[in-house]
Length: 389
Image (cartoon, rainbow, N blue to C red; front, side):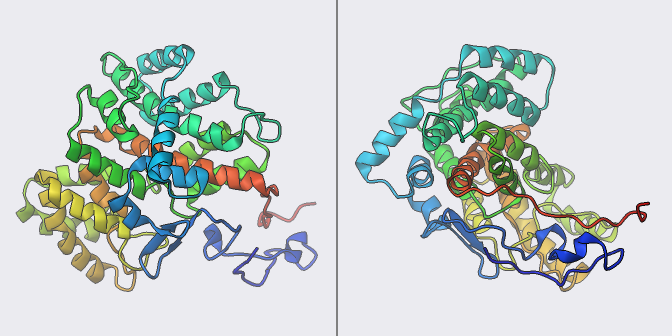
């Protein structure tokens, strides 16, 4: 295990036990906490990968199920393997009646989609008999397929029930992306919409040790079951600084009636200290490759939001360089993700849950990897309060 550290400094005195430990940067910035073979991000290069494969290239050339297979079996499938995996995964899309009953209750309580998804996913794990990986008799990768396959059905059912619409059963003849769109919207999606959504889903399966992925690994390290790891990760993803940003990008666009209004709006927002959603990233100091591919996808789709996003992006970047010199704030994935998700017909309330549909596969892959070579994650803290008696 590698570490990038600062010299330990006790905030109290040399007798404080914390002085014996290594102090690291706030937010674990620059700290390597584990090895992984799942994927990685090279922020200074604007590059990320799944195993040895360029993730952006996979999003352009592979289906969602093929990349999902890579995360479960650690290899790109042959045509026969891909067909078998698609059949295998589609068989797990149906959720138990007990979970559907809970979904009716959650929808009736007007629960927010991410809150409802956490509750329903937790019950799904219980109904499937998911237990600690220390004593789970079913192979952990197969458990990950079960949970990831059923989650889109949960999200779609929650949405339709909350809108007073009939909940639709999964159609195993369709791929996951197409069936998810059908179960949400109630109509068969176009091939272009499915292709755009698959691009987005592939691009967001994994992205290093982000907050939600790290949360999943911490929970797994305690011996917690896969479902608990996923539910905890959902809680982390719900935060607007992590997975909750795309819908806020559309909220920003809604404040601008025409592209000619954009310069005034941008200057006013930056002068007042507002954060412009969709720009800046903790890791990338070069262009976000996910944003580059989704920019092209948005341009192909067209529409009011696409026109606004494409027109405003250079204005925002120029203004950020002036107002935030030295920060090097570039366009991130959320900016164009919002346009693409809206363009395929998803309501903005489902943007973050849809992010979770793909990222769940990454979380579960990390949970399996953590379980395979586990040591409980237990860092130290430095006490900075009043001197104890």
